[in-house]
Image (cartoon, rainbow over all chains, first blue to last red; front, side):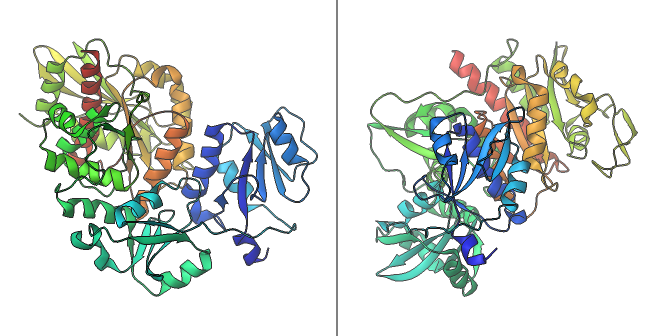
Length: 319
Length: 179
């Protein structure tokens, strides 16, 4: 297939359960080295590869479209849907998604991809936007006064460009930058001209450098914080005290002073985690209304007591 | 009283090593010749289960169990998990199938064990670690399992201890909620 056409392929979903969409999205990233192309996931109006459930009106409508490549998502027992270009069986296995994506052979014309409209924010805000773009994980090009200064590519965990912008002074200057998605070939060209570093590692180092001196998520007393999910600590190198703090805070909402009280940590230590998780999009601010309760980790066995946990900790620490 | 923590994962994921590093007595191993060289090039594998233990004093013991890695023993896993303080799912990052591996283990343990505080330990990592962690996070989120994912190297006791610290902290968080 023509490489140019491959880069214009966009995936959409019709009638799939959210966890099925997530598995397809995730399979692209975990198996990215094995894929010939990583495709953006977009809304149905822009998609030209559609995973559709024939059992839903929305899915059926898509499967009847001839100008797009369609994949019927159905049970193994169901008859193959004749109009679909391919079939993916439920329950969806990431490995099956990989094989299917690598076997897509499209001879239909594609509508062109539309770049995102640029947004303007300070650097912490743009980093957070880049990390939370779950549906479109293409790279972001950051510009200042119209000139490119940095590329953020969460899909590859890479960033490149002018690293002097990552000094605490520049990062917190409040200067505004614009961000826009760019075609993959342009990013590759830009990336070739600059040194790249792991993005996640950079965000954690930034948070360490900030040293708990400032709350990146603001000082709104009416808002509470909550972890959207357990933060990715792979590049963090944090102490067991901080690991414990994340565990204690992960499943509820909190304000900073309450979090310090609960974890018995001082604010400057705690902010290293909170600021990093804010930049990575894993911490969110909830203003007003009821904070939805997350699924907790479950329930402690009946025999567990605080003193038992202390004894185990002491024993493991050789105390 | 006896308490237990389970270590599970594919053959070669590091279960036996983790238990060896954490146990304060030489662990009891039940290795046999590995008949599934296609799954792992280890010459031996765990047939029943490994276990190590820590004497907590006052007559209490913490047992660390390693499940047998081969799938034909999977019927044992949920039985072993009953009443556990936590489960460590070790994932071998050097295999090309981390999500599929985890998927098989979660299904084999079954929904009735998912309420047990659990942590995913990504072992044998390389330069693409962050992306693998993100992929596992996304997968867990899709399955509505809010478990931590930690990068580990169970050959180092301090790193293996981090996994247990998270399990203890999760239990602590649950206790705080009950108060």
